Amino acid sequence: MNISIMKPHVSDPLRDDRIRLAAQGILGAARDAMVRLFDTLAEWQGRTMERRHLMKLDARLLRNAGLTKADAAAEYAKPFWRT
Image (cartoon, rainbow, N blue to C red; front, side, top):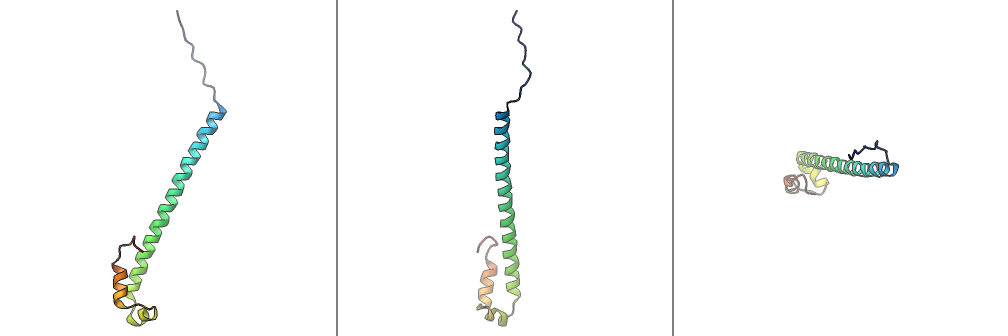
């Protein structure tokens, strides 16, 4: 009769460290991706707000900035992701 006895699980410290380091790497990459995403979203929101403000400027203020109403309208017409 062949009876197999299961060995109690013995933790391998090197394996545990490798798993921990891999998890830290993955979490670090995910964190970095989230930071880049939020930075991009903030940039897009800022660009949209600036374009709205630009459209509210009168001709005198636009002229002071070296722009015309047509320049302001062309900038306003751009999608938020375009510079």
